[in-house]
Length: 337
Image (cartoon, rainbow, N blue to C red):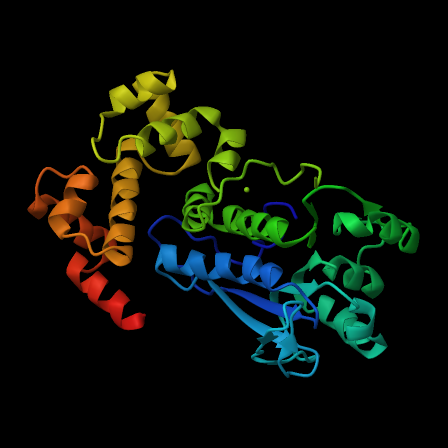
């Protein structure tokens, strides 16, 4: 998928701006799929909305008949409904694993072929690529699948350019080799549509470092992906991460990362979309938010651990960042749990 494929008719979200309509995603889950593949697909979308504090992405889970499907773990997965030919949207994702040919029979394949024309893009996770190949939409396209199935897939679909990469994006068709690559693919979508900064923040929610590029052979996020695009920015962010409790100036960050302050400022604005100082403050406040929600530490202690000179300065900055006082955020989080 090129940068414009999924965005052609949809306005792109800018920093601090709301988007006119959420990205509309339908996720078809077949029985005997991996729960981890499902989670790696859905949770980044949820985190994208949470981090941005907007409904940037709207999704629904569907099954062939609308009933819950049993995962490989034996656990049931409920659906919002059944897939049907009236559905339309921006992205159709197909998640499959074992016995996919049985779970997606001729009638289902025929229905999916119709739906492929009603969605701007189609993606397959793990054996979802097999379903897409049976739909005929991988003819003459590049794709990937789970590494265990490479030889069999290549024999079954010789007109598909099968690659051993973690994810493959070819125009409006996308494939991922399994659960971890599914997360790579979702971060790719977020990065392409909403920018590096949001993708970085979503990856950080899962403490996920993209140590592999999406094009790496099977045996993205934070800083691994940023390091590929601009390693000097990644180096600067690592300096910031080590200085949460005792913040340092942009001059110190630049020196430790091996560049001038002017270069640091320019690279951050180009890659992240904001100044190093603004990003560093946000990084400290994100750390504070996790402490507020996940610990019982007093607010004074959290202020100290995130480098604020006083509780009042911390309180003002936190409220601006989170949209509510720290004690209120903690109270709501406790009620939710």
